[in-house]
Length: 320
Ligand code: NAP
Ligand code: 8YV
Image 1 (cartoon, helix red, strand yellow):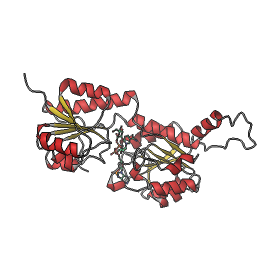
Image 2 (cartoon, rainbow, N blue to C red):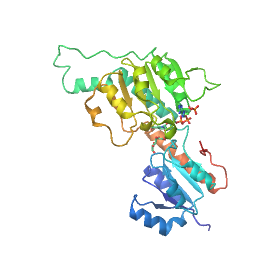
Image 3 (spheres, rainbow, N blue to C red):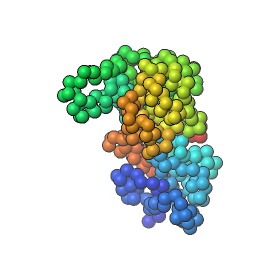
Image 4 (cartoon, rainbow, N blue to C red):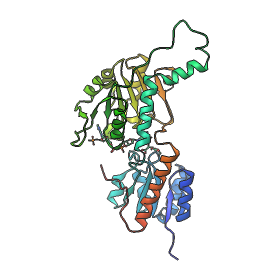
């Protein structure tokens, strides 16, 4: 009987994925960062042919290079900002990831945040729960911003961005987008200047890649261009938005509101946001449905299975 490939699992994963991995491979868990991990890697790093990680956990060059027999990496998630694809490529190690299967859920959550901020849904829920409505207050619940027919700016018209744009047609929204370069096959108007897209938009949805290339793309200038009637939705990475500039813009009502799935230092969130009614926050849940997480898990397994069968990975990341 041939030996089962030996994998290193970098962090906790979906329980059903951990079960599937254990059925097919010999899996060891990487100890948490610190002296125990260093000792483990020094003693056993040469045992592993495969590394399983996630978009959040990633894998830096130090970890990749502490695994001299590593032949494949399979990541749960599409973001590559925490994964050193270049370091892997230098050693000829393919990196599997999970694009496309999460487009729907991330786009759905972007729209949920558009509606939640524009129509003040969590604020309205609080108003009812604490009994304010029953008290018949002199000042009625404030009016929201109409979403149907509004102008939607998309920053990052990639796989998920296009899915967001398609959702917008159901709301009769006009869509424009900003990427580093225009797309030939996209029916939506390209805006080369991000600030101009923000000035034009009623809702600005951010769904670029993360990493150094997009750090603080959304800065005070972009927020001021969006203005007191504009809403920011970020489902990309917290690093894409200058969080301190956003806090100030929300505190001083220099933008209409924000819907945030991601933050610069997750799970830490600036506490100044907790008391503001013009922000809606969720804990990085854009892909977090049973159906999508199972599809992502399946892609993690498919990438590994293809590699160990000598086939190309169904979803292999390329160096940016
Ligand atoms: P994708 O297809 O690679 O799209 C990324 C888009 O970002 C491309 O259109 C790219 O266009 C644009 N972009 C990159 N750098 C840019 C820059 N400096 N300025 C403007 N646009 C830039 O990726 P995807 O599958 O749609 O995923 C996008 C990101 O969403 C992921 O990388 C991940 O970080 C995030 N995500 C978050 C969640 C969540 O749970 N919140 C879930 C899944 C994904 P150009 O190359 O033409 O500039
Ligand atoms: C992941 C994500 O669920 O795919 C990504 O890039 O951000 C989410 O879908 C999350 O990061 C788990 O690692």
